[in-house]
Image (cartoon, rainbow, N blue to C red; front, top):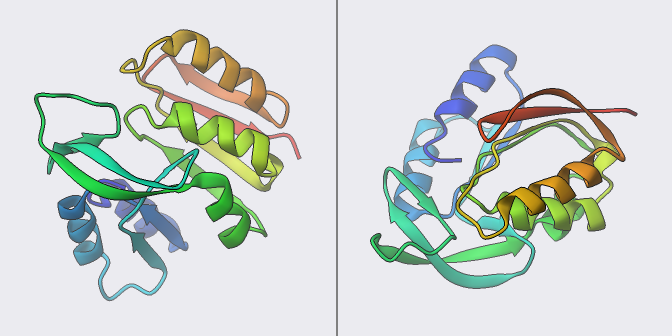
Length: 167
């Protein structure tokens, strides 16, 4: 979610419903302030992963990650299992899922692929990161899982890729 700047551009173009998940307290407050009067945009001060837990989030108000970086400050944040949230909130589907989650994609996507009907997500934009062990192999497994329900539209390695539902 960061501060909601990307969501703001999408909203201004499509006037759509948007849910933003941003676990960093400062960034979440900024996103909430950016959308305060807007009832179509919800900001949740939580992160998504493959488990429910309270954990350390590393970083500052310019960016944060669940991937440990000893040089950055840490905050204790709530993390929820993505598939549980999606199965409860998005039973009817999602038009666009954008993930730029600083390494958490390697936890979120396998959980969703295994425990959520991925065919309910029309478009997926993903930025894969190189900040996790064995990231190439993990990315290959995720892409193989996505290919069961989606086709790649474009791929700029470790910048952004777009997948479109085949349903």
